[in-house]
Image 1 (cartoon, rainbow, N blue to C red):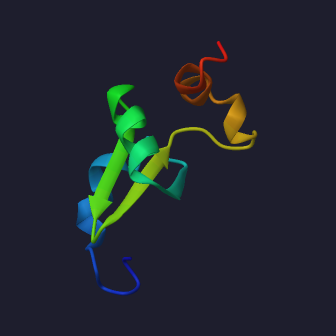
Image 2 (image 1 turned 45 degrees about the vertical axis):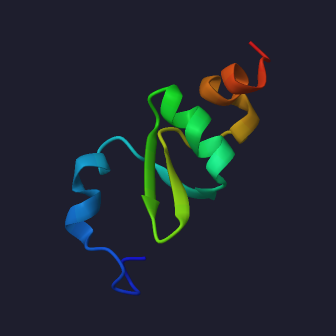
Length: 71
């Protein structure tokens, strides 16, 4: 989105230190992640999750396990 000039780099500054990956997700998951205090950006009809971990499968993230009732 930055390369396409849809949002500015300054828009992401509050999240730079915490977010390790950005994932395009649907509105259902975005709402559940927001409820868990996760970084969600909603722009242009898209939802982006600022994942704060990396290097493991997403299903292993504590927040995903919580949402899925796997904990």
